[in-house]
Length: 234
Length: 234
Image: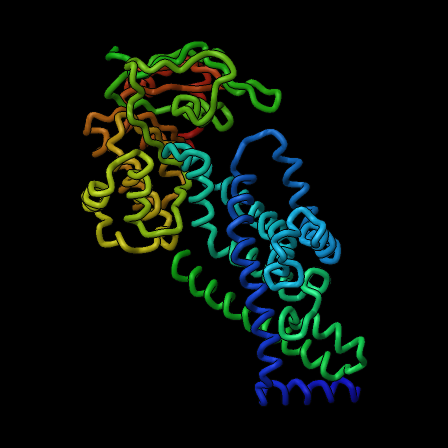
Protein backbone atom coordinates (compact mmCIF):
# COMPACT_ATOMS: atom_id res chain seq x y z
CA UNK A 1 0.00 0.00 0.00
CA UNK A 2 2.79 2.39 0.86
CA UNK A 3 4.04 2.16 -2.72
CA UNK A 4 0.61 3.28 -3.97
CA UNK A 5 0.27 6.19 -1.57
CA UNK A 6 3.87 7.21 -2.17
CA UNK A 7 3.32 7.20 -5.89
CA UNK A 8 0.18 9.31 -5.59
CA UNK A 9 2.19 11.84 -3.62
CA UNK A 10 5.06 11.66 -6.11
CA UNK A 11 2.68 12.09 -9.04
CA UNK A 12 1.08 15.09 -7.38
CA UNK A 13 4.44 16.62 -6.63
CA UNK A 14 5.70 16.05 -10.16
CA UNK A 15 2.65 17.70 -11.65
CA UNK A 16 2.66 20.63 -9.23
CA UNK A 17 6.37 21.28 -9.67
CA UNK A 18 5.93 21.00 -13.43
CA UNK A 19 9.30 19.30 -13.48
CA UNK A 20 10.87 20.32 -16.82
CA UNK A 21 12.28 16.86 -17.42
CA UNK A 22 8.86 15.31 -16.86
CA UNK A 23 7.22 17.88 -19.13
CA UNK A 24 9.76 17.05 -21.83
CA UNK A 25 8.95 13.34 -21.57
CA UNK A 26 5.19 13.95 -21.65
CA UNK A 27 5.52 16.36 -24.56
CA UNK A 28 7.62 13.89 -26.57
CA UNK A 29 5.11 11.11 -25.85
CA UNK A 30 2.25 13.21 -27.13
CA UNK A 31 4.21 14.55 -30.09
CA UNK A 32 5.24 11.08 -31.26
CA UNK A 33 1.85 9.45 -30.72
CA UNK A 34 -0.27 12.30 -32.11
CA UNK A 35 1.94 12.45 -35.22
CA UNK A 36 1.62 8.69 -35.59
CA UNK A 37 -2.18 8.87 -35.17
CA UNK A 38 -2.41 11.63 -37.75
CA UNK A 39 -0.37 9.70 -40.31
CA UNK A 40 -2.10 6.40 -39.50
CA UNK A 41 -5.50 8.09 -39.96
CA UNK A 42 -4.44 9.48 -43.34
CA UNK A 43 -3.59 5.90 -44.35
CA UNK A 44 -6.09 3.84 -42.38
CA UNK A 45 -9.32 5.73 -42.95
CA UNK A 46 -9.18 5.61 -46.78
CA UNK A 47 -8.05 1.98 -46.69
CA UNK A 48 -10.91 1.08 -44.34
CA UNK A 49 -13.45 2.87 -46.51
CA UNK A 50 -12.08 1.34 -49.70
CA UNK A 51 -12.28 -2.18 -48.29
CA UNK A 52 -15.80 -1.48 -47.02
CA UNK A 53 -17.18 -0.09 -50.28
CA UNK A 54 -14.94 -1.45 -53.03
CA UNK A 55 -15.61 -4.59 -54.99
CA UNK A 56 -12.38 -6.33 -55.79
CA UNK A 57 -11.06 -9.86 -55.49
CA UNK A 58 -9.54 -10.66 -52.13
CA UNK A 59 -11.68 -8.20 -50.22
CA UNK A 60 -12.74 -10.76 -47.63
CA UNK A 61 -9.17 -11.92 -47.14
CA UNK A 62 -8.05 -8.33 -46.69
CA UNK A 63 -10.76 -7.79 -44.07
CA UNK A 64 -9.57 -10.81 -42.11
CA UNK A 65 -5.95 -9.69 -42.35
CA UNK A 66 -6.79 -6.14 -41.20
CA UNK A 67 -8.76 -7.46 -38.25
CA UNK A 68 -5.94 -9.83 -37.38
CA UNK A 69 -3.28 -7.11 -37.59
CA UNK A 70 -5.12 -5.19 -34.87
CA UNK A 71 -3.39 -7.54 -32.49
CA UNK A 72 0.16 -6.94 -33.78
CA UNK A 73 2.62 -7.33 -30.90
CA UNK A 74 4.44 -4.00 -30.45
CA UNK A 75 7.82 -5.67 -29.83
CA UNK A 76 7.57 -7.52 -33.13
CA UNK A 77 6.71 -4.29 -34.96
CA UNK A 78 9.61 -2.64 -33.19
CA UNK A 79 11.94 -5.41 -34.26
CA UNK A 80 10.82 -5.25 -37.90
CA UNK A 81 11.20 -1.46 -38.04
CA UNK A 82 14.56 -1.82 -36.29
CA UNK A 83 15.75 -4.22 -38.99
CA UNK A 84 14.51 -1.83 -41.69
CA UNK A 85 16.24 1.20 -40.18
CA UNK A 86 19.41 -0.33 -38.79
CA UNK A 87 22.70 0.51 -40.53
CA UNK A 88 22.64 -2.72 -42.53
CA UNK A 89 18.92 -2.49 -43.26
CA UNK A 90 17.31 -1.29 -46.50
CA UNK A 91 16.57 2.15 -45.05
CA UNK A 92 19.72 2.29 -42.91
CA UNK A 93 21.30 5.07 -44.97
CA UNK A 94 18.62 7.47 -43.74
CA UNK A 95 20.07 7.28 -40.23
CA UNK A 96 16.68 7.27 -38.54
CA UNK A 97 17.25 4.60 -35.91
CA UNK A 98 17.04 5.89 -32.31
CA UNK A 99 15.25 9.07 -33.36
CA UNK A 100 11.68 10.19 -32.65
CA UNK A 101 10.98 9.71 -36.37
CA UNK A 102 11.73 5.99 -36.00
CA UNK A 103 9.28 5.85 -33.11
CA UNK A 104 6.61 7.53 -35.23
CA UNK A 105 7.23 5.02 -38.03
CA UNK A 106 6.88 2.07 -35.65
CA UNK A 107 3.67 3.43 -34.15
CA UNK A 108 2.20 4.13 -37.59
CA UNK A 109 2.85 0.49 -38.52
CA UNK A 110 1.27 -0.59 -35.24
CA UNK A 111 -1.94 1.45 -35.33
CA UNK A 112 -2.76 1.86 -39.03
CA UNK A 113 -4.37 -1.62 -39.06
CA UNK A 114 -6.41 -0.72 -35.97
CA UNK A 115 -7.77 2.45 -37.54
CA UNK A 116 -8.32 0.73 -40.90
CA UNK A 117 -10.13 -2.28 -39.43
CA UNK A 118 -12.41 -0.24 -37.14
CA UNK A 119 -13.22 2.30 -39.85
CA UNK A 120 -13.92 -0.53 -42.30
CA UNK A 121 -16.55 -1.86 -39.93
CA UNK A 122 -18.11 1.56 -39.34
CA UNK A 123 -18.18 2.46 -43.03
CA UNK A 124 -19.49 -0.97 -44.04
CA UNK A 125 -22.43 -0.60 -41.64
CA UNK A 126 -23.24 2.82 -43.06
CA UNK A 127 -22.85 1.54 -46.63
CA UNK A 128 -25.68 -0.93 -46.04
CA UNK A 129 -27.94 2.02 -45.30
CA UNK A 130 -26.63 4.40 -47.98
CA UNK A 131 -25.73 2.13 -50.89
CA UNK A 132 -28.92 2.27 -52.95
CA UNK A 133 -29.38 5.99 -52.41
CA UNK A 134 -25.79 6.85 -53.38
CA UNK A 135 -25.78 4.54 -56.38
CA UNK A 136 -29.14 5.98 -57.46
CA UNK A 137 -27.59 9.45 -57.37
CA UNK A 138 -24.76 8.15 -59.53
CA UNK A 139 -21.90 8.19 -57.02
CA UNK A 140 -18.75 6.42 -58.15
CA UNK A 141 -17.18 4.00 -55.68
CA UNK A 142 -14.41 6.42 -54.60
CA UNK A 143 -16.92 9.23 -54.24
CA UNK A 144 -19.23 7.00 -52.19
CA UNK A 145 -16.33 5.99 -49.94
CA UNK A 146 -15.41 9.62 -49.37
CA UNK A 147 -19.04 10.57 -48.67
CA UNK A 148 -19.34 7.74 -46.13
CA UNK A 149 -16.14 8.80 -44.37
CA UNK A 150 -17.58 12.29 -44.01
CA UNK A 151 -20.97 11.03 -42.87
CA UNK A 152 -19.61 8.64 -40.25
CA UNK A 153 -17.07 11.16 -38.93
CA UNK A 154 -18.42 11.05 -35.37
CA UNK A 155 -18.22 7.27 -35.15
CA UNK A 156 -14.81 7.29 -36.81
CA UNK A 157 -13.47 9.44 -33.99
CA UNK A 158 -13.73 6.30 -31.83
CA UNK A 159 -11.50 4.40 -34.26
CA UNK A 160 -8.93 7.20 -34.19
CA UNK A 161 -9.03 7.31 -30.39
CA UNK A 162 -8.48 3.57 -30.21
CA UNK A 163 -5.37 4.12 -32.31
CA UNK A 164 -4.20 6.95 -30.07
CA UNK A 165 -4.75 4.88 -26.94
CA UNK A 166 -2.72 2.05 -28.35
CA UNK A 167 0.07 4.35 -29.55
CA UNK A 168 0.53 6.33 -26.38
CA UNK A 169 0.38 3.23 -24.17
CA UNK A 170 2.69 0.82 -25.99
CA UNK A 171 6.27 0.41 -24.88
CA UNK A 172 7.76 -2.44 -26.90
CA UNK A 173 8.06 -0.73 -30.28
CA UNK A 174 9.31 2.66 -29.13
CA UNK A 175 11.79 1.03 -26.76
CA UNK A 176 13.42 -0.97 -29.55
CA UNK A 177 13.53 1.67 -32.30
CA UNK A 178 13.93 4.69 -30.00
CA UNK A 179 16.37 3.23 -27.53
CA UNK A 180 15.00 5.23 -24.55
CA UNK A 181 17.76 7.83 -24.86
CA UNK A 182 17.43 10.47 -22.15
CA UNK A 183 16.26 13.74 -23.59
CA UNK A 184 16.02 12.39 -27.12
CA UNK A 185 13.73 9.39 -27.37
CA UNK A 186 12.57 8.89 -23.80
CA UNK A 187 8.78 8.83 -23.54
CA UNK A 188 6.39 8.06 -20.70
CA UNK A 189 6.14 4.31 -21.21
CA UNK A 190 9.87 3.76 -21.65
CA UNK A 191 10.54 5.86 -18.56
CA UNK A 192 8.07 3.74 -16.59
CA UNK A 193 9.83 0.58 -17.77
CA UNK A 194 13.23 2.05 -16.87
CA UNK A 195 12.24 3.30 -13.41
CA UNK A 196 10.58 -0.04 -12.65
CA UNK A 197 13.74 -1.94 -13.53
CA UNK A 198 15.76 0.50 -11.42
CA UNK A 199 13.41 -0.21 -8.52
CA UNK A 200 11.95 3.29 -8.22
CA UNK A 201 8.39 2.02 -8.12
CA UNK A 202 6.74 5.22 -6.78
CA UNK A 203 8.16 7.29 -9.65
CA UNK A 204 7.20 4.61 -12.19
CA UNK A 205 3.67 4.41 -10.84
CA UNK A 206 3.39 8.19 -10.65
CA UNK A 207 4.26 8.42 -14.34
CA UNK A 208 1.66 5.72 -14.94
CA UNK A 209 -1.03 7.80 -13.24
CA UNK A 210 -0.11 10.80 -15.35
CA UNK A 211 -0.25 8.69 -18.50
CA UNK A 212 -3.67 7.32 -17.61
CA UNK A 213 -4.94 10.81 -16.76
CA UNK A 214 -3.82 12.17 -20.12
CA UNK A 215 -5.53 9.33 -21.98
CA UNK A 216 -8.72 9.82 -19.93
CA UNK A 217 -8.80 13.56 -20.55
CA UNK A 218 -8.29 13.11 -24.30
CA UNK A 219 -11.11 10.56 -24.41
CA UNK A 220 -13.41 12.71 -22.31
CA UNK A 221 -12.84 15.66 -24.65
CA UNK A 222 -13.50 13.54 -27.71
CA UNK A 223 -16.60 12.07 -26.12
CA UNK A 224 -17.98 15.50 -25.28
CA UNK A 225 -17.39 16.77 -28.79
CA UNK A 226 -19.06 13.69 -30.22
CA UNK A 227 -22.11 13.97 -27.95
CA UNK A 228 -22.54 17.59 -28.90
CA UNK A 229 -22.12 16.83 -32.60
CA UNK A 230 -24.62 13.97 -32.58
CA UNK A 231 -27.20 16.16 -30.87
CA UNK A 232 -26.53 18.88 -33.39
CA UNK A 233 -26.35 16.84 -36.60
CA UNK A 234 -28.27 13.64 -35.81
CA UNK B 1 -50.84 3.27 -75.85
CA UNK B 2 -48.52 6.27 -75.70
CA UNK B 3 -44.92 6.17 -76.86
CA UNK B 4 -42.84 3.79 -74.76
CA UNK B 5 -40.41 5.22 -72.26
CA UNK B 6 -38.71 1.94 -71.64
CA UNK B 7 -39.28 -1.66 -72.57
CA UNK B 8 -38.57 -4.66 -70.41
CA UNK B 9 -37.55 -7.59 -72.57
CA UNK B 10 -37.85 -11.07 -71.03
CA UNK B 11 -36.39 -9.83 -67.80
CA UNK B 12 -35.26 -12.37 -65.25
CA UNK B 13 -33.57 -11.86 -61.91
CA UNK B 14 -32.26 -14.62 -59.68
CA UNK B 15 -30.93 -14.18 -56.17
CA UNK B 16 -30.00 -16.76 -53.58
CA UNK B 17 -31.04 -19.61 -55.86
CA UNK B 18 -34.55 -18.21 -56.27
CA UNK B 19 -36.08 -16.56 -59.30
CA UNK B 20 -37.55 -13.29 -58.08
CA UNK B 21 -38.47 -11.90 -61.49
CA UNK B 22 -39.41 -14.35 -64.20
CA UNK B 23 -39.63 -13.58 -67.95
CA UNK B 24 -41.15 -10.14 -67.52
CA UNK B 25 -41.84 -8.16 -70.65
CA UNK B 26 -43.60 -4.81 -70.59
CA UNK B 27 -43.60 -1.36 -72.12
CA UNK B 28 -43.73 1.55 -69.69
CA UNK B 29 -45.39 4.48 -71.49
CA UNK B 30 -43.72 7.89 -71.47
CA UNK B 31 -45.27 10.83 -69.65
CA UNK B 32 -47.64 8.66 -67.63
CA UNK B 33 -47.93 7.61 -64.03
CA UNK B 34 -47.51 3.87 -63.66
CA UNK B 35 -48.27 2.33 -60.29
CA UNK B 36 -46.90 -1.12 -59.52
CA UNK B 37 -49.17 -3.15 -57.26
CA UNK B 38 -48.86 -6.66 -55.92
CA UNK B 39 -48.61 -8.67 -52.72
CA UNK B 40 -45.54 -8.65 -50.46
CA UNK B 41 -42.63 -10.55 -51.95
CA UNK B 42 -44.10 -10.41 -55.45
CA UNK B 43 -40.99 -8.69 -56.77
CA UNK B 44 -42.29 -5.13 -57.17
CA UNK B 45 -39.29 -3.44 -55.61
CA UNK B 46 -36.87 -5.74 -57.43
CA UNK B 47 -38.58 -4.90 -60.71
CA UNK B 48 -38.23 -1.20 -60.07
CA UNK B 49 -34.56 -1.56 -59.10
CA UNK B 50 -33.99 -3.40 -62.38
CA UNK B 51 -35.61 -0.55 -64.30
CA UNK B 52 -33.59 2.06 -62.42
CA UNK B 53 -30.37 0.09 -62.98
CA UNK B 54 -29.53 -0.47 -59.31
CA UNK B 55 -29.30 -4.19 -60.02
CA UNK B 56 -28.41 -6.04 -63.21
CA UNK B 57 -30.86 -8.57 -64.63
CA UNK B 58 -29.78 -12.21 -64.75
CA UNK B 59 -31.27 -12.43 -68.24
CA UNK B 60 -33.15 -10.10 -70.55
CA UNK B 61 -32.76 -6.37 -71.05
CA UNK B 62 -34.09 -3.02 -69.99
CA UNK B 63 -34.27 -0.91 -73.16
CA UNK B 64 -34.75 2.84 -73.05
CA UNK B 65 -36.53 4.17 -76.11
CA UNK B 66 -34.16 7.10 -76.41
CA UNK B 67 -30.56 6.40 -77.30
CA UNK B 68 -29.56 8.52 -74.38
CA UNK B 69 -30.77 7.31 -71.01
CA UNK B 70 -33.19 9.84 -69.52
CA UNK B 71 -32.36 11.60 -66.27
CA UNK B 72 -33.63 9.32 -63.51
CA UNK B 73 -34.15 9.70 -59.80
CA UNK B 74 -35.49 7.41 -57.13
CA UNK B 75 -37.14 7.99 -53.77
CA UNK B 76 -36.98 5.12 -51.29
CA UNK B 77 -39.34 4.05 -48.57
CA UNK B 78 -36.90 5.18 -45.90
CA UNK B 79 -35.21 8.40 -46.89
CA UNK B 80 -31.42 8.32 -46.53
CA UNK B 81 -30.31 11.76 -45.43
CA UNK B 82 -26.65 12.68 -45.48
CA UNK B 83 -25.27 14.07 -42.23
CA UNK B 84 -25.26 17.64 -43.47
CA UNK B 85 -27.77 20.43 -44.00
CA UNK B 86 -30.95 20.05 -46.06
CA UNK B 87 -29.55 22.43 -48.67
CA UNK B 88 -26.28 20.49 -48.84
CA UNK B 89 -28.20 17.25 -49.36
CA UNK B 90 -29.66 18.78 -52.51
CA UNK B 91 -26.45 20.36 -53.77
CA UNK B 92 -24.67 17.04 -53.18
CA UNK B 93 -27.09 15.35 -55.60
CA UNK B 94 -26.52 18.16 -58.11
CA UNK B 95 -22.76 17.85 -57.83
CA UNK B 96 -22.98 14.12 -58.57
CA UNK B 97 -25.16 14.99 -61.55
CA UNK B 98 -22.38 17.24 -62.84
CA UNK B 99 -24.19 20.55 -62.33
CA UNK B 100 -21.77 23.47 -62.13
CA UNK B 101 -20.95 24.86 -58.72
CA UNK B 102 -22.52 28.27 -59.34
CA UNK B 103 -25.87 26.80 -60.39
CA UNK B 104 -26.30 24.31 -57.54
CA UNK B 105 -27.37 26.53 -54.67
CA UNK B 106 -29.86 28.53 -56.71
CA UNK B 107 -31.50 25.41 -58.11
CA UNK B 108 -31.63 23.73 -54.71
CA UNK B 109 -33.14 26.78 -53.01
CA UNK B 110 -35.71 27.12 -55.78
CA UNK B 111 -36.90 23.53 -55.30
CA UNK B 112 -36.91 23.87 -51.51
CA UNK B 113 -39.21 26.88 -51.91
CA UNK B 114 -41.54 24.89 -54.14
CA UNK B 115 -41.81 22.01 -51.65
CA UNK B 116 -42.27 24.44 -48.77
CA UNK B 117 -39.05 23.52 -46.98
CA UNK B 118 -37.04 26.68 -47.58
CA UNK B 119 -37.19 27.52 -43.88
CA UNK B 120 -35.36 24.26 -43.12
CA UNK B 121 -32.59 24.76 -45.67
CA UNK B 122 -29.80 25.23 -43.14
CA UNK B 123 -31.07 22.59 -40.66
CA UNK B 124 -29.16 19.30 -40.35
CA UNK B 125 -31.21 16.86 -42.43
CA UNK B 126 -30.88 13.94 -40.03
CA UNK B 127 -32.70 15.62 -37.17
CA UNK B 128 -35.86 16.32 -39.21
CA UNK B 129 -39.03 14.29 -38.72
CA UNK B 130 -39.74 11.31 -40.99
CA UNK B 131 -42.27 13.27 -43.02
CA UNK B 132 -39.91 16.21 -43.49
CA UNK B 133 -37.08 13.85 -44.47
CA UNK B 134 -39.24 12.22 -47.11
CA UNK B 135 -40.12 15.64 -48.51
CA UNK B 136 -36.42 16.50 -48.60
CA UNK B 137 -35.83 13.19 -50.40
CA UNK B 138 -38.48 14.17 -52.96
CA UNK B 139 -36.91 17.61 -53.32
CA UNK B 140 -33.50 15.98 -53.77
CA UNK B 141 -34.96 13.86 -56.58
CA UNK B 142 -36.85 16.76 -58.12
CA UNK B 143 -33.90 19.12 -58.16
CA UNK B 144 -32.24 16.76 -60.65
CA UNK B 145 -35.07 17.57 -63.10
CA UNK B 146 -35.71 13.89 -63.74
CA UNK B 147 -37.50 12.64 -66.80
CA UNK B 148 -38.37 9.50 -64.87
CA UNK B 149 -39.02 9.36 -61.15
CA UNK B 150 -39.09 5.99 -59.39
CA UNK B 151 -40.82 5.84 -56.02
CA UNK B 152 -40.67 2.81 -53.73
CA UNK B 153 -43.55 2.99 -51.23
CA UNK B 154 -42.86 6.67 -50.59
CA UNK B 155 -45.67 7.06 -48.06
CA UNK B 156 -45.43 3.70 -46.30
CA UNK B 157 -43.89 4.95 -43.06
CA UNK B 158 -45.55 8.36 -42.89
CA UNK B 159 -48.50 9.73 -40.91
CA UNK B 160 -51.61 10.76 -42.89
CA UNK B 161 -50.68 14.44 -43.01
CA UNK B 162 -47.17 13.83 -44.32
CA UNK B 163 -48.57 11.22 -46.67
CA UNK B 164 -50.98 13.72 -48.19
CA UNK B 165 -48.19 16.28 -48.61
CA UNK B 166 -45.90 13.73 -50.29
CA UNK B 167 -48.77 12.70 -52.56
CA UNK B 168 -49.40 16.32 -53.51
CA UNK B 169 -45.71 16.79 -54.36
CA UNK B 170 -45.65 13.67 -56.52
CA UNK B 171 -48.66 15.08 -58.38
CA UNK B 172 -46.85 18.38 -58.94
CA UNK B 173 -43.67 16.66 -60.15
CA UNK B 174 -45.73 14.51 -62.53
CA UNK B 175 -47.11 17.59 -64.28
CA UNK B 176 -43.57 18.63 -65.26
CA UNK B 177 -43.17 16.20 -68.16
CA UNK B 178 -41.84 13.58 -65.81
CA UNK B 179 -42.87 9.94 -66.06
CA UNK B 180 -43.60 8.30 -62.72
CA UNK B 181 -43.17 4.68 -61.72
CA UNK B 182 -44.32 4.02 -58.17
CA UNK B 183 -44.62 0.96 -55.98
CA UNK B 184 -47.23 1.25 -53.25
CA UNK B 185 -49.62 -0.74 -51.10
CA UNK B 186 -51.83 2.27 -50.59
CA UNK B 187 -54.73 1.63 -52.96
CA UNK B 188 -56.25 5.06 -52.34
CA UNK B 189 -52.98 6.63 -53.47
CA UNK B 190 -52.86 4.30 -56.47
CA UNK B 191 -56.40 5.24 -57.52
CA UNK B 192 -55.77 8.96 -57.21
CA UNK B 193 -52.34 9.11 -58.82
CA UNK B 194 -52.10 6.30 -61.33
CA UNK B 195 -52.77 6.39 -65.03
CA UNK B 196 -51.84 2.73 -65.41
CA UNK B 197 -51.57 -0.20 -63.04
CA UNK B 198 -48.88 -2.83 -63.37
CA UNK B 199 -49.86 -5.82 -61.27
CA UNK B 200 -47.04 -8.11 -60.23
CA UNK B 201 -47.57 -11.52 -58.70
CA UNK B 202 -44.89 -14.11 -57.93
CA UNK B 203 -42.30 -12.39 -60.12
CA UNK B 204 -44.54 -12.00 -63.17
CA UNK B 205 -46.63 -9.18 -64.54
CA UNK B 206 -50.15 -10.50 -64.64
CA UNK B 207 -51.91 -7.30 -65.56
CA UNK B 208 -51.04 -3.95 -67.16
CA UNK B 209 -54.15 -1.85 -67.63
CA UNK B 210 -55.47 1.69 -67.19
CA UNK B 211 -56.31 2.39 -63.57
CA UNK B 212 -60.09 2.62 -64.05
CA UNK B 213 -60.23 -0.75 -65.75
CA UNK B 214 -58.05 -2.34 -63.10
CA UNK B 215 -60.19 -1.36 -60.15
CA UNK B 216 -63.52 -1.83 -61.97
CA UNK B 217 -62.76 -5.18 -63.47
CA UNK B 218 -59.45 -6.83 -62.57
CA UNK B 219 -58.73 -9.48 -65.14
CA UNK B 220 -56.88 -11.94 -62.94
CA UNK B 221 -58.15 -13.71 -59.87
CA UNK B 222 -55.01 -12.71 -57.92
CA UNK B 223 -55.57 -9.03 -58.64
CA UNK B 224 -59.17 -9.21 -57.56
CA UNK B 225 -58.14 -11.03 -54.44
CA UNK B 226 -55.43 -8.44 -53.77
CA UNK B 227 -57.82 -5.49 -54.16
CA UNK B 228 -60.40 -7.06 -51.85
CA UNK B 229 -57.79 -8.07 -49.31
CA UNK B 230 -56.15 -4.69 -49.21
CA UNK B 231 -59.41 -2.78 -49.14
CA UNK B 232 -60.63 -4.71 -46.16
CA UNK B 233 -57.64 -3.33 -44.28
CA UNK B 234 -57.93 0.31 -45.33
